[in-house]
Picture 1 (cartoon, rainbow, N blue to C red):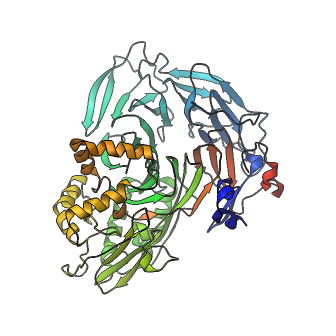
Picture 2 (cartoon, helix red, strand yellow):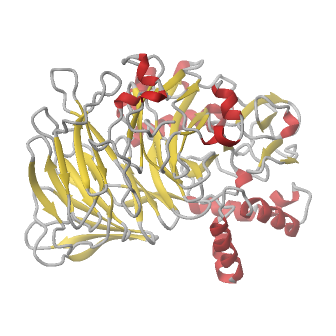
Length: 616
């Protein structure tokens, strides 16, 4: 019945889903495990900051150590989180705070210092301040940037530095980030800065002061707001998503740029790391999720499923799986090593050594490891999407034969001629390379290019796509080198399509600038861009390069699941061991039990019992 409803039109399409099915089984909404304001009244969210959720485990003896914090408008709540085990009791928050003159925008617990008697919670505010509170002891310890001398703009993201009990990083809509120490004061005058490091579109300054004071460092990154940042699992790298559309990845201690990527259109709003630190996913105003390889510093896939801006992306560490093939040590030093990387984060040295082993597989016929990364996204279209990133996408030419590789980008359910893009299947053949790929409109774009000029086993390490840019198999290949290679062989890439450069440009323009998921407002901006020669030249510099490949140049993922699950835009997606948690701008925090993890009475899954009225 549910499938029929999903496939039907009209009213059924607008119904809010209370369950969905993946290959693992059925995920079910636990309506009695819903957290919100105690009165359960939908919050009028006009003009307010996004609802955010933070979790911490205090490791108490009762086995019920999870705590949840969420902000709704001017209010901040702190509850015991009972998850799939028991219904939420909203009448008894451990702590509740109502702020005047400013609104909480984001928050983060320190997992290192959390106990049953005390937790350290950072809260960022719309006027630029950051508060350190203990919602168990109900003590307000400190207020940072109180006089707004450091930054007057809204706090967009706040995070404890991994492994530290005292350092935390704060991003603002001004485009600046500040490193604080909880032990230091902020001073009574505006800080004076001294340049420490400068690079392309970023700079790092130290605070000049005779005595220790905050901030320790100021980062200025890109142009416009810095919307979100995320530390790598090992804490050594920092990924920043900015309003200028760039993802920038820095070595945190050395403050050096490791690599960057440009969105297809508009600003980037969210970013997350895979559990092993190999991949970064970003989402934003182009309605896409973009997968970026940390080691290769390039876009390896895009996902199209949302109909509006993507507000949150997150990896599911529980569903992400790695299974060794034959031989077992092909992917990493050992099976234990790799699983340790998955759980505890990969050091850069180990990641690089793993990459060298990976690159060796280009010249062998051994079966690669079976690896699947699961990640999810939620957006302003009120939809939850789940995605699988499989080895077909990650290693498109493995295993490689002694002659040529035949790669199809197509739907598993459709014949090869359709060219619909959902998965990438690689098979070995002795004919010339043929690539079937499609743009977002799903129309065919098949190009045949002969590789007979190459000796055996010397195929370029390219993605499964037509008119592909060459990528050296050298892991140390820089962005500049790759861009140079890309421009030097663009003539040959054009020839393989059997049409003139002008015709190709028109075709690309239609495909890339007339997609259904770009709104009319966005199209107006594109038209303004094309009216100016200089703006047109700037856009051309990134589109079709390593920074921002064209749509047909990288695999296009389709979501495993794409369900409307709320009335208002979604602002939270968190994967926990036995459930996933979502929240919408109305102030309702929903718990979805993983398959087989429903611990409550089955009656709670009856939509009629929904206490809030948010589920139809």
